[in-house]
Image (cartoon, one colour):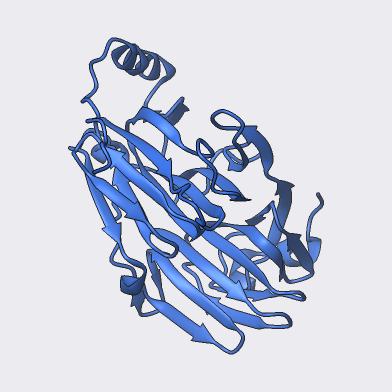
Amino acid sequence: MGMDSSSASGPASARTERGVVAVWPAKPTELVGDSRVLRALPRVELRRVGPFVFCDHFGPSPAVPGTMSVPPHPHIGLQTVTYLFSGAIRHRDSLGTVQDIQPGDINWMTAGRGIVHAEDVDSSPGAPPLHGIQTWVALPRAQRQIPPAFEHIPSAMLPCVEHEGARVRVLAGRLGEALSPVPAFHPLTYLDVELEAGATVSFPVEPTHALALYVADGDVSIGGTTVERGLLAHLDEGASTLTLHSVRGGRAMVLGGEPLPDPLVIWWNFVVDSVAEGRARFADWEAGRFPPLAPWVDK
C-alpha cells in the first residue's frame, strides 16, 4: 500500500520521529464455525515484530452462542495475550484457571513447555458485542520449556497516560516512567492508544524496538501516512519518538520490542526451533499427551 518515503529516508541517527515503512491490510481469516477475524500477523511480508508473532482482530460482532468461542487447543513456547474493547470472554486452561476477561483487562498466559486452553464468549441476553485483539508473544529460546503460568491483570492496574484528546494505556513494557505489571521475559512494547477527532499525541519509544501499529477503529496517521481500520503499519527503526494524529478519531495498538534471534519457527499453535519439533508436538497433542482441560460446569 505504498511507502512514506519522506519518513523512511535518511540515517536512523538523524531522525527523532518514527515513520512508516509499509502499510498492509489484515487478512480476513476463518477461525471457528462462522467466526471471522482480521489477521495482521504473521504475513508473508512480515513474520514478526520484535517478539510479537501473531495478531488477530475480532469484531465488533454480536455476542450470540458459538461466535468466537474457541474449543480446547494447545500452545507451546509463547504467551497468549487477550485484550477486549467490548464484550466478555471466559478463559479456561489446564492449570485449572477459570477467568472472565472484561474490557481493558490483560489476559496473559505463558504456555512454556505446554498448556491447553479454551475461550467461551459471553452470549447471555443483552451481552454487548465482542470486540478485541489477541496477540502471541514468542518466548526467548531459554524460556520455551518453562512451566506454564497464567496472569490476569485487571484494567485498573494498568498504567494510563493522559494527554489532551488522547489516552495511552501501557499494556506491557513501559512508556517513559509508566511500567506495566505484566510479566514479560523479553523487552517489549504494547500500547493501546485512543485519539479524539483532531487530536495529536507524541510519546517516547525505545530506539532499539521493532514496532508496528494496527488500527482497530477510525484512522490514525503517522507523519504523512494515514492508516485506516484493519491496516497494519510497519514502522522504521532507530528513532525515539512516535507522533500520532487522528482526523476522525481512532484507536490503535502499538506493538513490538527487541528482535528475537533465530531459530524461531511458528508451527500451528507453537513457537519451536524447527518444523520437525512442531510436528512432534502436534503428534503429542493428537495422542492425548498434553495436560487435560477440566470441563466447565456452570453452577
